[in-house]
Image (cartoon, rainbow, N blue to C red):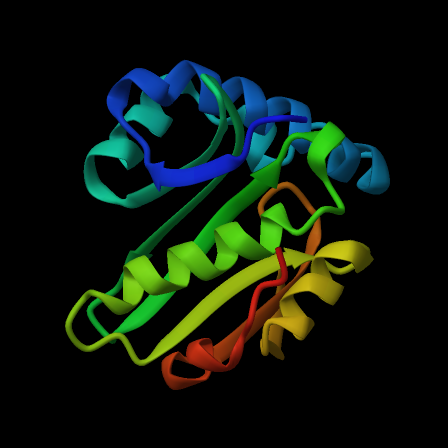
Length: 168
């Protein structure tokens, strides 16, 4: 490729690229579940802009193009909640998702009192489950989302984050 992918904080100017990437990257999930009403596909640009103002939002850039994104925030109980990890389909399977996951964990660890990380994925999303398990996450529950998709909820203790190594 000639260029390396860099991970950095998103800016308000990145909102349109992030929403387009999110829409593209979550098509496979929508197809897997036969459900195009999943939240990443129905999120509004204004809602994303609000997240950019309040949450930790990281992007992976290849030159000027955003090719990956992830969001997170820490709740009052010290749980770092990670959401909407997505990678451009042409770059999936090359470790970028793992890099983004590690980067958001490190960013959320910077908040005082972060004790654990929590995320969720659809119960049929084997590649996502494989990534999260490799990163040290364990299933702690499940629920059905408002769009009808059965979700698997996974967590890991914050101290375990340092045990997860990302291969380049």
